[in-house]
Length: 125
Image 1 (tube, helix red, strand yellow):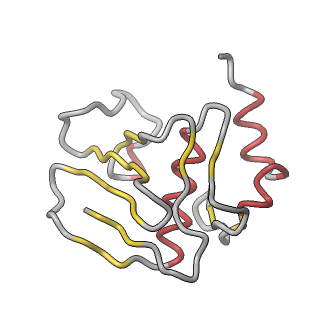
Image 2 (cartoon, helix red, strand yellow):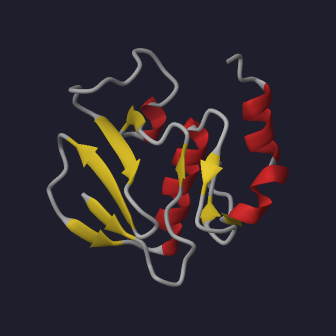
């Protein structure tokens, strides 16, 4: 699927580790076995530009979607979660969500986000 960000949002972001491979179902994430390429029930997220992003699945259909601000925020949260050290956005106006149910935050708040900072503190690389 090709996702198109609304023009009034900060758009999609990228990182030093932009390919996000995860289970399609949220409840399967974080459990064994880990997701892998060529496995059913997995998805690959990849930001293409500020206005375009890709979601690849085996079960999905090829299509283009104009997505809502909330979708952009969740996508950006996934990219941030997979980042090793750096996150890149056109500016600090992009939106992200790191936890289910939380309201979207602006990118210029990321350096103070305790969930982002805790994840980086535990990084062993």
